[in-house]
Image (tube, helix red, strand yellow):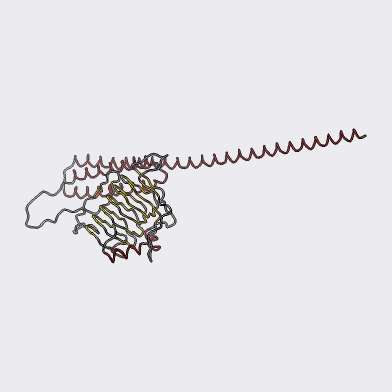
Length: 366
């Protein structure tokens, strides 16, 4: 009797152990299946994302190539047609309009490239930019060849010195600015908005700034504020200066800046041939630097009473800021960060009001 009870107990114990083992095995199998399914879901999501990016890249490459080829064919056709026809005043007027239209097409293609930089590699961006630069050069060379300048002659009138016209197309890779032909109906000569200033505090606002192309050159030890929504800003030759810029509708192009601080909000930023600069940046596209060293980047922190309204008027999204995404055309390695620029971390933001007061009181900015 007792032996039978012991045998029954052993049988029950063995059955319980067997059930427990089965449960453990099933639990491990379920866990493994869940992990495998999660892994597959992640892989599928990554593949879908890569496919979308590849489709976007392929579409851009095809569209950009077709537009660039169409512009190039137009330039070649103009040269061939003009060579076969007599040059008259009316033909020159027609050519002027044609080249103006070509310039607009090149600018639109430049804008298309800029808005697509978020999903393009640095190598692709530079290759496309070189194509645009070649188109701009070909267009300008063809224009100068086909539209003859006025013959030289003596007259009693004084001739004003030759000056630069307002820049429209920025040549990224060669640090040159392509200048469109000056309109015959424009009776006023171009002058820089600000130039040849030293040890000054300068503030532009209202009608002298809004929706206009602001050009600045050859400033030293100056403090400049742009309170409003400029159309575009170009800065050339700035040494130990501070620029505080409200929202800019299109682009800011700066070159040859040394030990200069910029606070700016814009759609595009191009910084060339500059050294030891600090930038407080709000940019909706990808910023590009070239031939620059010791560039420090931080979040935009300029503020004034009507800045929110100016963001809206400039068409900039205040919630979208890509200031951490900088393309360095001199550093194309995708795995190693560029040594030419760094993000400022744990650095106190400057007090612009204090710096402004210092400049206004002392007449110089140290």
